[in-house]
Length: 234
Image (tube, rainbow, N blue to C red):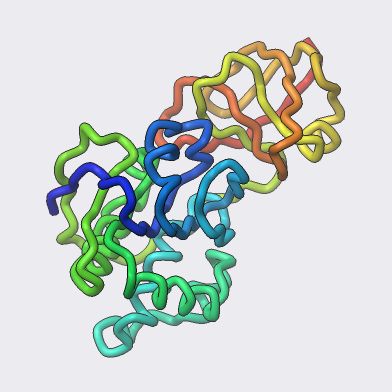
């Protein structure tokens, strides 16, 4: 399926994680429209009605929307299971589908291209675009096409309990008060950040606008842009 650049002023369903930090040019373009955003993170600087879901649960979110949009086509899918796995309520999903009747774009985060279940993400996005006559756009506008033809069994979600980092162009580890409390560190501390794929040093930077236990730091991902971490003072 061909993707296109977002057209300013058009209403959009977004699957974007903290666009004010990670895609600020696109975030600014979306300021003049009515938008909905489904994400594990609430971005208070982004002009969109937020709907919360679990980290990495985009395949389940989109499958739930597809099932409720076309019961006959996706009869084998269990909406209760999809809702429980994604933590997106069925009534919330129906509100989003109602929004899609007046939307013109579906915009997905470029990080989803590295999601282990992207083939299913792409398939369900393609279905929704066809069903609701939506144009598909990526936060990375250099992406011109994705394969939406495959559908397979949904892969099990990863466990992201505890401290989590999301990749962003941030030299310091930017985080919320809740993150500080859970990590038992203070604003300005020098820490060693350790994950299964990297270890690096960083300085803690409190951001009063952030909530939750996901922090932001520039690191080299190995796949998806979210990773579980542990911290200790350097």
